[in-house]
Length: 181
Image (cartoon, rainbow, N blue to C red):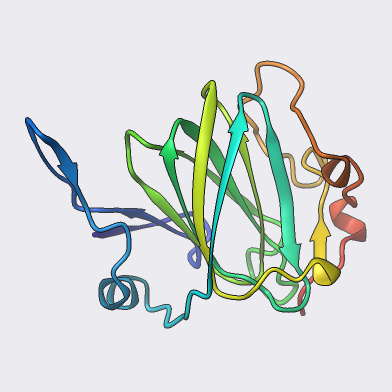
Protein backbone atom coordinates (compact mmCIF):
# COMPACT_ATOMS: atom_id res chain seq x y z
CA UNK A 1 0.00 0.00 0.00
CA UNK A 2 1.03 3.56 -0.62
CA UNK A 3 0.25 6.49 1.68
CA UNK A 4 -0.15 9.97 0.26
CA UNK A 5 0.13 13.04 2.47
CA UNK A 6 -2.77 15.48 2.35
CA UNK A 7 -2.83 19.22 3.11
CA UNK A 8 -3.48 18.17 6.73
CA UNK A 9 -0.49 15.95 7.60
CA UNK A 10 -2.39 13.68 10.01
CA UNK A 11 -4.98 12.73 7.36
CA UNK A 12 -3.65 10.26 4.81
CA UNK A 13 -4.91 9.01 1.47
CA UNK A 14 -4.16 5.30 1.13
CA UNK A 15 -3.77 3.51 -2.20
CA UNK A 16 -3.77 -0.27 -1.91
CA UNK A 17 -1.74 -2.46 -4.23
CA UNK A 18 -4.35 -4.04 -6.49
CA UNK A 19 -3.70 -7.27 -8.37
CA UNK A 20 -5.97 -7.71 -11.37
CA UNK A 21 -6.35 -10.02 -14.32
CA UNK A 22 -9.09 -11.36 -16.59
CA UNK A 23 -10.79 -12.97 -13.56
CA UNK A 24 -11.15 -9.73 -11.59
CA UNK A 25 -9.00 -8.23 -8.84
CA UNK A 26 -7.63 -8.81 -5.35
CA UNK A 27 -6.22 -6.46 -2.74
CA UNK A 28 -5.71 -6.35 0.99
CA UNK A 29 -8.17 -3.76 2.23
CA UNK A 30 -6.51 -3.79 5.64
CA UNK A 31 -3.31 -5.24 7.04
CA UNK A 32 -2.47 -4.05 10.56
CA UNK A 33 1.31 -4.42 10.20
CA UNK A 34 1.41 -2.52 6.88
CA UNK A 35 -1.01 0.12 8.21
CA UNK A 36 1.20 0.84 11.25
CA UNK A 37 4.39 0.86 9.14
CA UNK A 38 2.96 3.23 6.52
CA UNK A 39 0.92 5.57 8.74
CA UNK A 40 2.72 5.44 12.08
CA UNK A 41 -0.73 5.13 13.68
CA UNK A 42 -0.77 2.31 16.22
CA UNK A 43 -4.51 2.04 16.66
CA UNK A 44 -6.92 -0.71 17.49
CA UNK A 45 -10.01 -0.86 15.30
CA UNK A 46 -13.00 -2.01 17.38
CA UNK A 47 -15.97 -1.50 15.09
CA UNK A 48 -16.75 -1.76 11.37
CA UNK A 49 -19.60 0.32 9.93
CA UNK A 50 -21.37 -0.04 6.58
CA UNK A 51 -23.78 2.48 5.06
CA UNK A 52 -25.68 2.64 1.79
CA UNK A 53 -26.92 5.97 0.50
CA UNK A 54 -28.45 7.49 -2.61
CA UNK A 55 -27.10 10.29 -4.78
CA UNK A 56 -26.89 13.69 -3.03
CA UNK A 57 -27.13 12.20 0.47
CA UNK A 58 -24.76 14.15 2.65
CA UNK A 59 -23.80 12.59 5.99
CA UNK A 60 -21.91 14.73 8.48
CA UNK A 61 -20.01 16.48 9.74
CA UNK A 62 -19.84 14.10 12.72
CA UNK A 63 -17.44 13.46 15.58
CA UNK A 64 -17.54 12.26 19.18
CA UNK A 65 -16.29 14.76 21.76
CA UNK A 66 -15.50 11.82 24.09
CA UNK A 67 -14.55 8.36 22.87
CA UNK A 68 -13.09 10.09 19.82
CA UNK A 69 -12.98 7.84 16.78
CA UNK A 70 -10.28 7.46 14.19
CA UNK A 71 -11.77 6.19 10.93
CA UNK A 72 -10.41 4.29 7.95
CA UNK A 73 -12.94 4.95 5.17
CA UNK A 74 -13.42 3.14 1.85
CA UNK A 75 -16.14 2.70 -0.76
CA UNK A 76 -17.21 -0.72 -2.05
CA UNK A 77 -19.89 0.49 -4.47
CA UNK A 78 -20.26 3.90 -6.12
CA UNK A 79 -18.40 7.13 -5.33
CA UNK A 80 -18.33 9.70 -2.53
CA UNK A 81 -16.64 13.00 -1.75
CA UNK A 82 -15.14 12.29 1.67
CA UNK A 83 -14.26 15.17 4.03
CA UNK A 84 -12.24 15.50 7.23
CA UNK A 85 -12.25 18.72 9.30
CA UNK A 86 -9.63 19.34 11.99
CA UNK A 87 -11.45 20.15 15.26
CA UNK A 88 -8.35 20.06 17.50
CA UNK A 89 -7.97 23.60 18.91
CA UNK A 90 -4.21 23.16 19.54
CA UNK A 91 -3.53 21.96 15.99
CA UNK A 92 -1.88 24.25 13.41
CA UNK A 93 -4.54 23.04 10.93
CA UNK A 94 -7.52 23.72 13.26
CA UNK A 95 -10.61 24.55 11.20
CA UNK A 96 -9.09 23.33 7.93
CA UNK A 97 -10.56 20.56 5.81
CA UNK A 98 -9.51 18.11 3.13
CA UNK A 99 -11.77 16.26 0.71
CA UNK A 100 -11.18 13.39 -1.71
CA UNK A 101 -13.19 11.33 -4.14
CA UNK A 102 -13.24 7.75 -2.94
CA UNK A 103 -14.80 5.10 -5.14
CA UNK A 104 -15.15 1.40 -5.69
CA UNK A 105 -13.16 1.98 -8.87
CA UNK A 106 -10.12 3.78 -7.39
CA UNK A 107 -10.18 1.65 -4.19
CA UNK A 108 -8.52 4.48 -2.25
CA UNK A 109 -9.08 4.87 1.47
CA UNK A 110 -8.88 7.88 3.77
CA UNK A 111 -7.31 7.59 7.22
CA UNK A 112 -8.93 10.18 9.50
CA UNK A 113 -7.44 10.12 13.00
CA UNK A 114 -9.33 10.98 16.18
CA UNK A 115 -9.83 14.73 16.55
CA UNK A 116 -11.53 15.27 13.19
CA UNK A 117 -15.13 15.74 12.11
CA UNK A 118 -16.07 13.50 9.19
CA UNK A 119 -18.67 13.67 6.47
CA UNK A 120 -19.32 12.57 2.92
CA UNK A 121 -21.49 13.34 -0.08
CA UNK A 122 -22.67 10.58 -2.44
CA UNK A 123 -21.86 11.64 -6.01
CA UNK A 124 -22.89 8.42 -7.80
CA UNK A 125 -26.44 7.04 -8.05
CA UNK A 126 -25.82 5.05 -4.85
CA UNK A 127 -22.77 4.31 -2.71
CA UNK A 128 -21.85 1.80 -0.06
CA UNK A 129 -19.27 3.02 2.42
CA UNK A 130 -17.33 0.89 4.89
CA UNK A 131 -15.25 2.32 7.68
CA UNK A 132 -13.30 0.94 10.55
CA UNK A 133 -13.47 2.90 13.83
CA UNK A 134 -11.01 3.06 16.71
CA UNK A 135 -13.70 3.48 19.39
CA UNK A 136 -17.30 2.45 19.82
CA UNK A 137 -20.25 4.57 18.76
CA UNK A 138 -21.37 6.66 21.74
CA UNK A 139 -24.48 8.68 20.79
CA UNK A 140 -24.33 10.72 24.00
CA UNK A 141 -20.94 12.12 22.86
CA UNK A 142 -21.79 12.61 19.18
CA UNK A 143 -21.62 16.14 17.81
CA UNK A 144 -22.51 17.54 14.41
CA UNK A 145 -21.20 20.63 12.61
CA UNK A 146 -23.24 22.26 9.85
CA UNK A 147 -22.20 20.82 6.51
CA UNK A 148 -22.40 24.26 4.85
CA UNK A 149 -20.76 26.33 7.58
CA UNK A 150 -19.40 29.50 5.93
CA UNK A 151 -16.30 29.55 8.14
CA UNK A 152 -15.29 26.11 6.85
CA UNK A 153 -16.36 26.82 3.24
CA UNK A 154 -16.19 23.17 2.16
CA UNK A 155 -16.34 22.89 -1.62
CA UNK A 156 -18.90 20.08 -1.78
CA UNK A 157 -19.37 18.95 -5.43
CA UNK A 158 -23.14 19.45 -5.33
CA UNK A 159 -25.36 19.54 -8.40
CA UNK A 160 -28.55 20.03 -6.34
CA UNK A 161 -29.62 20.44 -2.73
CA UNK A 162 -28.20 17.69 -0.49
CA UNK A 163 -30.41 15.17 1.28
CA UNK A 164 -29.82 15.55 5.02
CA UNK A 165 -30.95 13.82 8.20
CA UNK A 166 -32.71 15.88 10.87
CA UNK A 167 -29.56 15.58 12.98
CA UNK A 168 -27.40 17.04 10.21
CA UNK A 169 -29.88 19.84 9.51
CA UNK A 170 -29.55 20.79 13.20
CA UNK A 171 -25.72 20.80 13.21
CA UNK A 172 -23.95 23.64 15.00
CA UNK A 173 -21.94 26.37 13.31
CA UNK A 174 -18.22 25.66 13.55
CA UNK A 175 -17.63 28.75 15.73
CA UNK A 176 -20.09 27.33 18.32
CA UNK A 177 -18.99 23.70 18.11
CA UNK A 178 -17.52 21.84 21.03
CA UNK A 179 -13.92 21.03 20.01
CA UNK A 180 -10.93 19.12 21.35
CA UNK A 181 -8.22 21.05 23.22
